Length: 542
Image 1 (cartoon, rainbow, N blue to C red):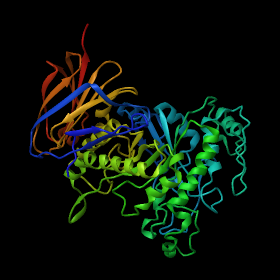
Image 2: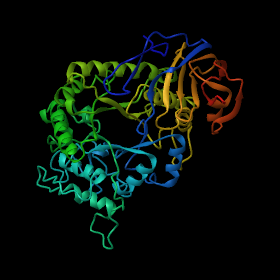
Image 3: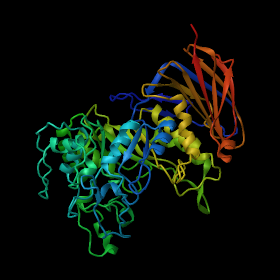
Image 4: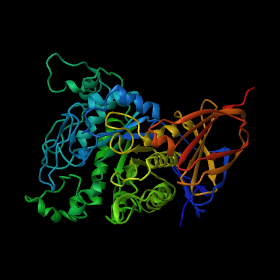
């Protein structure tokens, strides 16, 4: 069944601004006459500092710099995820030493991809300038490489980020005997300036006395891919269970109790207790596989993690990469399915999560959702360069409209956002088109309903009084003639129109901007094929 915006119905949650569910039957792809209805009296969610984020990699040599910051700021990114990268770097990286735990007993062997300059101290001012940080905590390895991650190591990281330098609160020793000292010890490093003679911690001395207020902490990266479901699902290092001497025998780790979802849930409770003892205001996230798309790996993972730990989980961390391709070329993206995926798959994921919460969580407790990776699968190549722009605008806007806590575009380079030398690519402009209508934290998303599954519609009321409308025509060949009906809105007859589409992407050109007159409560707007049109409506003059 095709799911589109025609039958949107809100899902009422006990956690503020959580979800907006889209259900219903689709309409013809060939249809070019479209009705869009906006009700300004029915806000559905607000933009927050953590809503739109970017996924970064420890292996990238030159992203913590003013040029990248400026580009991300202009596009509307206000959150940045750290640390991560190929081969599950988050579960190898140790923040207090700025080193990856070297683990070679995997098949294929892990490679140390860490660029030393991408340390926590350098990351902190970058995240502060952008707005917010989403931290992926090391669950897979301890400092010595003799076992799994240690909750007290994570607690010390919270102390560094959010602690008071004057605090004498003890963090204590972990199970290996490593002493993680006090909250004030780590917070004082953050507050101090580098020593003349480096004692190994100068990279943490950033002269920042005030807390960083990093609030989102996800425990582990794709932990369900730790080998519990077999060697074919074992890209994430997890030393809670021993590896065999011969990597070819890694399949023997399958169904090991210490790799199980129940065990992960139990450890989640320990992480939450240790980390919230330092800062009770932080949010703890759990690594779940994407329901129901990823149940081929194991339907029991999400269920059993929630059974064991839901009471201590504030959000769940999901990865979403639609990957339908056109046979026989498995690298050629099925563009129609990819562009339909946000309106079809995201609501199904939300519905399945709500079902899981109802069955496995304490009554009234509904963890929020973070898509800590979101993009078209990077190995599936579209034929049209504009497709990533349409997908980025639609998926990030829908995630924001649903009240998603965080959605991080995957990734900064190599997947359609920026070139290696930091030139904007189509996905960048797709995110920027969203930023035009949803400009700053506090901007409201309004109820907007499209009659055609091939046209996505989003409307906002910005804090500065401007109304925004974003229309996405996902038809590759037919313009969309759209009749827009605004209800319960007050605005004048002038505004601005912005367009980004197939022609701009082919020419490597930015969006087009033009004055727009004759704007009323009803208006006719034509959106070219494979294009995004924004209308920014000026407030009514008094």
